[in-house]
Length: 220
Image (cartoon, rainbow, N blue to C red; front, side, top):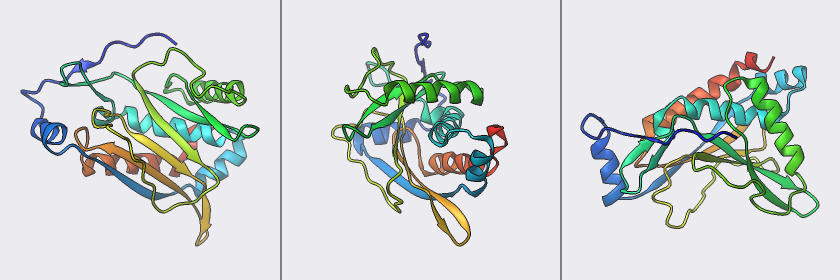
């Protein structure tokens, strides 16, 4: 994996969210979570038709939506001023059924779905039997986290990150899909640092993920 450029500082003098950022960074540091049920009926049907792998395809859709918005590519510089990466890459859990543990691996984000899918599937295959939690070293700083709980369909998910106030990238958790009213629904939870994004931005992110999964022509 090639090294990405350093994050670009955000110009505080022109940034419309400066006051909000400083408020939630310094005065009221907090995170929030939203869990939604995403309609993946057509997505699941297209997966069956094309033979694409579910998890790799889900991660590409999440990564595409995340990379479309600066709010979800943010980081702090050493002086705790805001900056944004040009691109962020998904770090995702891979379950080891023999050990009943998981490892966290990453692949570079690629807007070309086919290329990303094949790279993600290869990483899952390679590290499925890993015994280390982080088998790939070194790990770049511009990673956002994705995990999956395919054994559970949930309506709420809460992740408590101790002293995680300076972590600005989103954390996304995928549940197991279930059928309801003739449709297939997927639980999706996103944890967001309020210094980086407000409810408007997170709702827009979730809506874009839902649109990608509702119109899965990119799976072909």
